[in-house]
Image 1 (cartoon, rainbow, N blue to C red):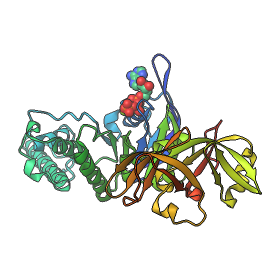
Image 2 (cartoon, rainbow, N blue to C red):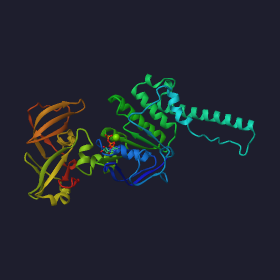
Image 3 (cartoon, rainbow, N blue to C red):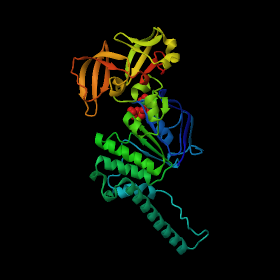
Image 4 (cartoon, rainbow, N blue to C red):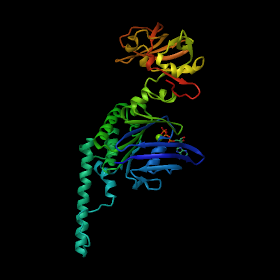
Length: 391
Ligand SMILES: Nc1ncnc2c1ncn2[C@@H]1O[C@H](COP(=O)(O)OP(=O)(O)OP(=O)(O)O)[C@@H](O)[C@H]1O
Ligand SMILES: [Mg+2]
């Protein structure tokens, strides 16, 4: 197990493509860190630099207490699972997992020093071979047990489902007993149900092994459900590093607020106005009185444009509707999406479309005009120029 530290790391590809810029992050020993962001934001490049598959243009990467900038991938003590994991088609599952260990040098811990003579050497060589075979077998069987694939060991990859193949790919990493696991979108080739299942399996694997893991995905649900902490990236830059709940409740800027959460946060262009000693979020079709504790943070925006953000579950939800004197947004129902446990209402307020996550038993019809209560204390105000969250 090991800590992984990236300091001022950057990657410039030929043609002056700056894929990663000034990346500073410490992944703690045993931590499950997820890197998430839209396509092309530099996730794979960062992971490949940690793995040693991509040269580092700037900065330092440390694994454990060793700077690895110039260390070959095979000597970094890491194991990586890719989206397109290539298993050897002509080898069995057992052989696929054992193969990389067979290629490794193996030390006999009980070797007698200074022994010589042809027969003694031959015997040592044979003994070492037996020991190595036994150790490989032990590790493969242990990995198979962890992943629940014991009954598949004699099969070849073409006789496996996508999820089973993915488990073998992970098994190949486990047998190596690496200090750090790296995953690059390992579940994207699986169907939705299998993805959910493998997601929990990888989390369980982390709980059991307690090895440092870095997991790249563009799927924010995977990020939220698996990560101890999440790094949100955009255009090669870190936007925010935080625990899943902190990221959700306290997004640093509009990008993070809109990227994390499904359905996404609703945004409205509005202004802050002062009325009867209260500060109000004013939009053409609604006025929302802000909580008094916002005053010191939003006062300087009085008379100015801001972006108002509110998550679907904080408009018209049972909790919002139960609040005393909650300000309301009058809007028209455009589409109703019953999800079973909740219903999404696609609403229109003036020129703005937004989504409300309401009680599934709430009765309304398309075309109805309704007032939806807003949980202001869970909503946000963003600076138009910097896009940073103000409250
Ligand atoms: N070998 C290369 N040469 C030049 N540019 C590259 C190279 N590899 C990647 N890039 C560029 O670097 C940027 C980051 O790519 P990267 O593969 O790290 O993105 P990503 O976040 O993993 O995206 P995705 O979610 O699509 O996998 C992109 O703009 C990409 O076009
Ligand atoms: Mg990628």
